[in-house]
Length: 378
Ligand code: SAH
Ligand code: SF4
Image (cartoon, rainbow, N blue to C red):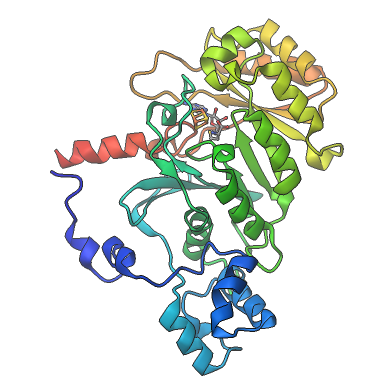
């Protein structure tokens, strides 16, 4: 089947072509300044802009009619000129472990994935920042796909709003919030899409916006050193570093961006990141690859490298994908590795793979579901 051929559903109300054809700018994705500029020609006063910002991001309304503290005339005018649009969902799945995965589709027919991971004491939304990735980490499935494009701020925010919609968690609802944390750990390298990620996350932490504390938002990077500095100054959320190796020769292969910014420079950027208290510890992610980076010596060297950086270590069991030569370290090896790091005085946790049955685990995003759908279609 021709993948580009429009499907019948696309022409139905709310379908992607309908959305693409709607010329009204979307308020979702605009920060306070953008909204003020967009609403200025209508003579909307600053305090009203603030109310509209709250309706959109804090109350999660999807129609201007719901903005009950605005006059009917203003609501009608806003509706004529703007929309409050949601993302189209082309597939939604729930894993046997409760993990949810949405495949969202944008007006240009590109797709990205968002994953919600419920845990007893929290719920984490794993958000994508790009479609594909320009980097080519050798153990990551997303890295085998070419970058298609950056996601816009509204496409990043749209993933949060979709999760809130589905979980029924806008402030008007009575339920305890299940979506408590955000990790920028979906597809793509967030620091290569800095402006859009910054805009979206600033709205996410805004108390009159999505209102999630910066302490509960983690941005994961493969190590774009100059941007780590800017992220500290301009975004100010928690930082996670995809370290994965303790020697440059190996990290050059696993995380090729290391050739540009080697381990010593990366760790210096971490030392300079505004940290200092326990609340601001940096997470070092370390994928466990059998016989590659999982020896006792690697664990000891890891602890040595992290000296002086308020940090914790997150060991990620490798999630295999078709065509990879890597294997996941044995459970005993991971335990021993964690032990050594722990004994050296660092908190080392092992990330439990979640949602593997719906291909939602780390490094499994997008290509596999596209492949799976293709298989079903043929
Ligand atoms: N591009 C960013 C964020 C997305 S990846 C980054 O690299 O940090 C989120 C995490 O999943 C990263 O630590 C990444 O290295 C890890 N990861 C990628 N592929 C994986 C796989 N197959 N198994 C386990 N973890 C993987
Ligand atoms: Fe890109 Fe991160 Fe995957 Fe590396 S691990 S290819 S940076 S998504």
